[in-house]
Image (cartoon, rainbow, N blue to C red; front, side, top):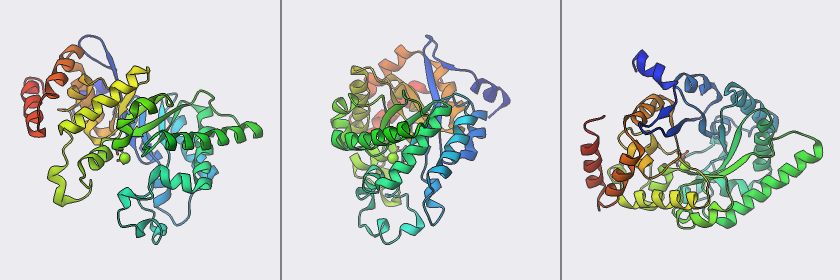
Length: 327
Ligand code: PEP
Ligand code: MG
C-alpha cells in the first residue's frame, strides 16, 4: 500500500451516495490488534479464539482467557470486538486432543465448534464467563459458530444465561446489553434463517464453511479446490436469503468469510445488502477503497443482474466486466 491509501484507510468508507459501510478485521491472536488498527479496521468482526487452545497441552482457564480478552477489548478502545466461541474440530485441532476429536472419519461433519462446546459444558462456560467479564470493559459481541438450527441456538443461549446468572450472583460485572449473534455457515441455518433471526442480535455469514458444506467441497482439499466457488449461484442465493431474513426483523447481517476480502466481489456483496464486512487486516484498506468507488444503487443493480447467471464463471465474467473501469 502507498502512504496515501493507508492514510485513507483511517477514514470511514462512504459510498458516493453517502452510505457508510463498516469494515472490520478478522484475527486470531491478541497481538494482532496493533496491526489491525494500523490498517484502519473499525472493529474486530471475528476473533477466532482457537489459537488459545491449540498451541498447548491443557486448556486455558477462565482467568487466562479473561486476561487475553481484556487486552484485546482495552486496546480496541470502545470499538466493537466480536468474540467467537470456540470452534475446535474440523480442520482446527488441539494436539492433545488426538484420540478423541481427530479419530473421527469426517471431522468437518463431526464433533466440531458449538457441538463440542455443548458437550464440554465446563470448558464452554469458562469461555463464556471470560467473554462476559471482558464485556464490562468495552463493546463485546458474542458469536456462536456452526449453528445448524434453532434448537442448538437456544441450547447455547441457555448456557449463556446460566453463566450470566452465576456472574450476577457473584456480583461480577458484565454488559447486560451484550449482543449475541451467530455465524451462518451451515446450509440448514440458511434455510431456517427467518426462524433463527428472531433469537439473535445479528448474523455473520461464514462463507468458508458455507461454501464447503453447500457445494460439498472440502475447504482444504487441493484436489477439489477448483470447485470451491464463492460465486456459485447457490452461494449467492443463500447470501441473499440470509440478508433478507435478517433485515425482515431488523437485525444487521455481516460477512466474515474470506470472500468478503475479495475486492472484486465486495460491490456484489454490498449490492446483496450486507451491512458489515470483516476481512483480513491487510485487505481492509483495499475494501474501503472499493466501497468509495460507487453508489449503493449501482450495487443493487449489479447484484440483481449477477443473480441471474447460472454458473460461477458467468457471474465472475459479468462482475469483472462491470468493474473493469474501477478496479
Ligand atoms: C467461515 O467459515 O467463513 C469463517 C469465517 O470461519 P472459519 O474460517 O474460522 O471456519
Ligand atoms: Mg467457519
